[in-house]
Amino acid sequence: MCKIKYRLYSAVFNFAKCRQGVTSIEYAVMAVLIATLVSVIFNTDSGGFHDAMEAARTTIVNALSS
Image (cartoon, helix red, strand yellow):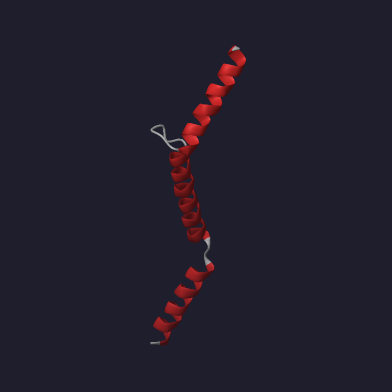
């Protein structure tokens, strides 16, 4: 019984000490957030950012052509 208890405590301690899995999950979450943000910002259908960029481009083109 003591050997099983020791193995269980050892496994839990080693799992808690290991940070590599946590770092991988953090990177995956950040990648999903960045991909979502880029998708929302550069959505070509419509949206505030897209409309503002189109207006700025039109203003610049009109200013350069006149």
